[in-house]
Amino acid sequence: MFNSKFKIISLIAVFAFNSYYLQGCGEDSVTTQADNVDFSSMSTGDSIGSDIGILVLDTVKVLIKDIKLNVANINQDSTNFKVGPYVLYLNMASSVNIISTAYIPPGTYDKVKFDIHKLGDTENPPDPDFADVNGRYSVVVKGRYNGISFIFKSDKSAHQKLTFPGNLQVSASGKSNITLQVKPYIWFIKNGLYLDPTDPANESDIDNNIKDNINNNFKCFVDNDRNGLPD
Image 1: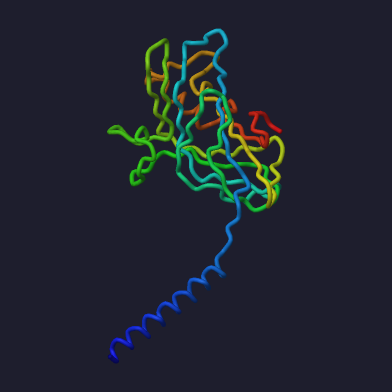
Image 2: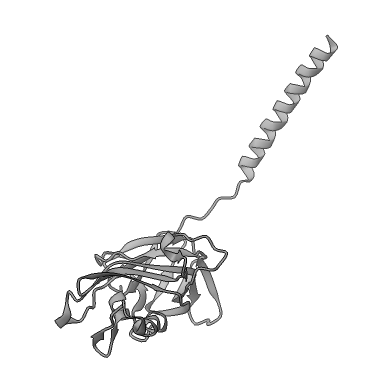
């Protein structure tokens, strides 16, 4: 009889403690900030006008990481947007697509920084195309050259720092958008002529076009209306 009463009292005490604890947790919970910046991407054709159809790109994937926004007029002060790595799948139809979203402290930002990232030996491939028996890669392009299918893979890493034409103003409420514009056809052009992606002799030139951004094949701008043009 005593044991039964003791068990009942113990269960009531445990229930009361748990109810109090759960209520306390609810009252002390941290409210997360709503995302206020979208990071979008788009691609543009920019093929050689007289040679349309020689090179056709069907799929373009870039492994990126450590996306950061730079506080305006302060070179060394930046805010993490996304760490990654994750795959940037370019929409070859030239439409603007949101690829990530995050909360950024309100303020004025003038640059975006990110790394084109070669998959490390211990990293799990987020996409099977970025690792095979021959190595690990940062960029994968599939298409056709003179009607013949090809797959080009780059194993180079590069740091990109792109200045906005106009500063990005971020507020605590509402949402801003920046669009990363990529021109992958430029990667396969040198001196006004196409580089055959199936020719190993062109590999270095194509890699350099991707990582050096000499021809501004990467641009980023404020695009709050998401029409693919700088605001």
